Image (tube, rainbow, N blue to C red; front, side, top):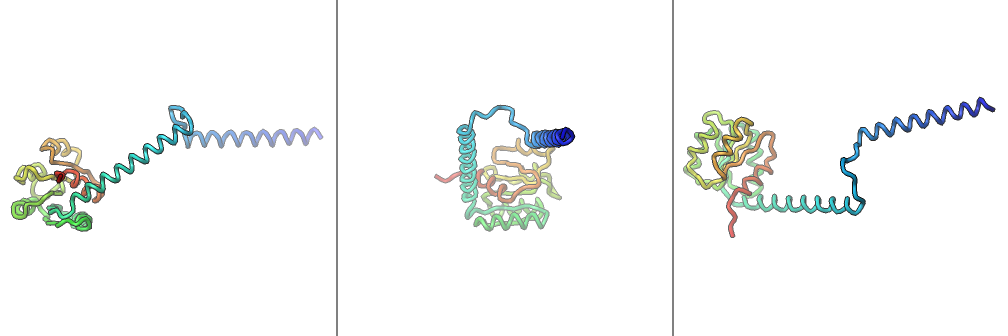
Length: 187
């Protein structure tokens, strides 16, 4: 009988040890937040506030995308695939897209067609991005540089308030929303 009790105690001790190890693993995988929760109601309030914020962000993004409808967009990108994807997105939004593969072609098309927005790859084969912007001679037109390197970012942002920069990889919808956001709103 005492041998059976001793065996039962060993099994219980082993079970407790395994349970303790599992709790340690769970604690490591799911660390507790630094500040303690004030309760269920406060957690639900924070969750509701985050959901409202996301809904407002989605509405603002949709308004920015709608602002592009019917606009002429000059798209300057030497890469066929990325240009095609961006063109499809812009055409889905109802934009008229004018495409160029080089910076010089883009400047000629901009002078001829007077676009409402310019979306240009920051790494053009024939001209630097800042030189492209200065040669554009359209100061009130929003310009979005995509594929911006970290070394270019500050220089391009200093060009003016109508300049935005997006690094790769980028979402074409986000680029379009940014371009729409930069357009002047019609009252």
